[in-house]
Length: 107
Image (cartoon, rainbow, N blue to C red; front, side, top):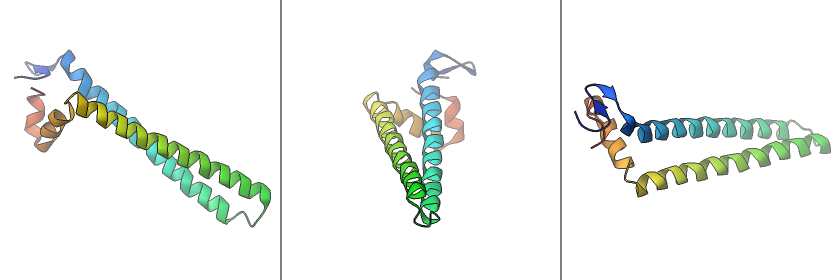
């Protein structure tokens, strides 16, 4: 067996792949929360009834949610750029093509 597995046990060379998966998971979670807040802010904006205080609160929610979504998208771009520059994304893409390839690890 090559790559980050030796005799079926993960070695330290698996850390970049695990780190990448954890970061992507957190970014997906943060992006989902940002979209939920955009929907929530839109609903509050629509149901504000023209009250300036409610409109300002809804506008603030929308502003922060959109800023958060932009940060999440930029984070995805940075993670993929680092993966591209270190040539680690091609390894993860080949592993994901067939389940049996995961045990072979990155070469």
